[in-house]
Length: 280
Image (spheres, rainbow, N blue to C red):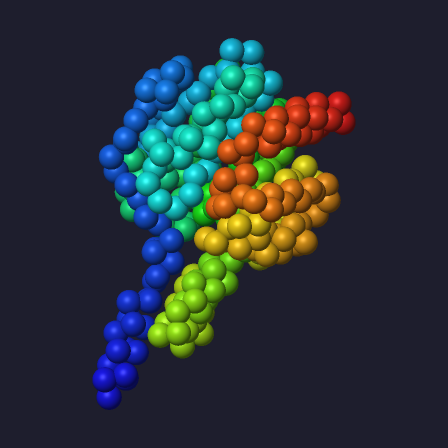
C-alpha cells in the first residue's frame, strides 16, 4: 500500500512536469558593462502581451547578427559567458530572456517561450542596425531544443541564414526517461513519465522540417547532462546542408571554451553567410 501511495504521489507530481525543464532566476548577477561590453537594454513584448527583456551587444562593423537562446537555468546574466566574445569577432548578439527569466514577466511554458522567440526575431527585424539577410540562430541545451522547433515552425524562420545547435536534447520525454533511469529507485517512473511529459515541441519531431539553410550541431563527448547521442539523432534527422562537430573532451555547453573552437565557429559563420548572400 505504501508503494501504491508513493506511486500516486509521484505520478501526480509528474503531471505537467514539462515545466520542470524551466529553472528561471530573476536576479541579474551582472551586466555586459561589468565585463567591458557595450550593450543596449531592450524592452519588448510577446504577442500575448508578456513583457520581455534582453540585451543587444553591438559589433563595431557587424558581419551578421546572432540570436542566442540560452539554457534552462538562471538567465542571460550567467549565460552571456557563452557569447560575450562574439561582438569582438564582428557579430551583433541579441540575448533575450524567456518569460519568467530575469527581468521578463510571465511564467515559462513551451508554447509561450516559442512566442517569446518570435518576439525576439520581430525585434531584430525591426532594427535598422541589423542586416536581416545575415541572422544566425544559436541555441544551447534547452535553448537548442527550442531553436530547432522555431527554425522548423516559427513564423519568421525564413530569415535565418544559419542555425547552430549546441548540446541540445532530442526530445523532452527522451531526456526525462534517461534521467529517471539513472537511479534504481526512480527507474520504474520512466514509462509513466512518458505519459505526462509534453512532447509536442520536441525537436526530433521537426528537425527534418528546417529548410535548406546551413545547420551545425555540436556535442561534447563528456557531456553528462545531455549525452552526445541526442545531438547525433538531431543531425541524422536534419536536411542537408548540415555539419556535426564532436568535441571529445568537452562537457555540457563547453565546446566553445577553447579559442580554437571559437575561431572555427567564426570561420564557419562567415563562410555560410557569404555563400548564402552569393546564392540569392
